[in-house]
Length: 205
Image 1 (spheres, rainbow, N blue to C red):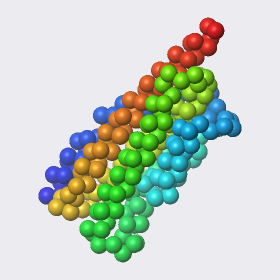
Image 2 (cartoon, rainbow, N blue to C red; image 1 turned 180 degrees about the vertical axis):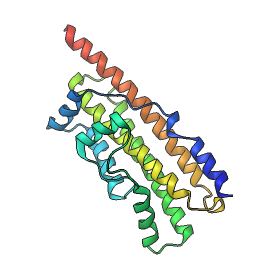
Image 3 (cartoon, rainbow, N blue to C red; image 1 turned 90 degrees about the vertical axis):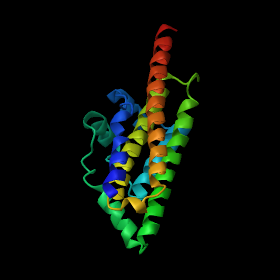
Image 4 (cartoon, one colour; image 1 turned 60 degrees about the horizontal axis):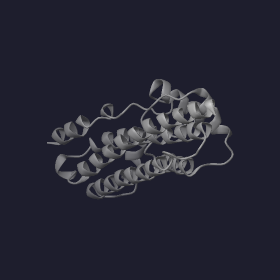
């Protein structure tokens, strides 16, 4: 039955992922004021733009909205993005099988985009980037991570409208996405630690 697969999906919950690290309001301001965008910031912003255009998530409220997400875990515009996403699937006139295929493709795309951002984040470990720049990079990267977690909720809620036998292969895509989210959480924690180390070095030099 459908409930069996959905139970498995929810068992691999976002709560198992590392919590998005808190950053200072100073870092949020720095991200908004930095004129030169690093590769990580470009990739992270492109990821969120893609998720919003495909209605995996609701449109954000910008930097202040992101700060509220870090504080409260949910944004004011995030009421039910899965409804819009499902409407989009059904509006295209696709069969239920085609809808499931589209779902799987979107989940794979969401995982791939986050993996690209994570690779950019990992390039900063051991770099000579300043603490100020690293903090700005971290804010942007964590924004992409929040987007990924919101997208996962949308996908899971949409999947709940299908029967188990219709979802062959999609659970594998979702598990891979969960792995991407866990890897991004770990990478964000490491980047936060490295930014703190750089700040200490700069303070004593």
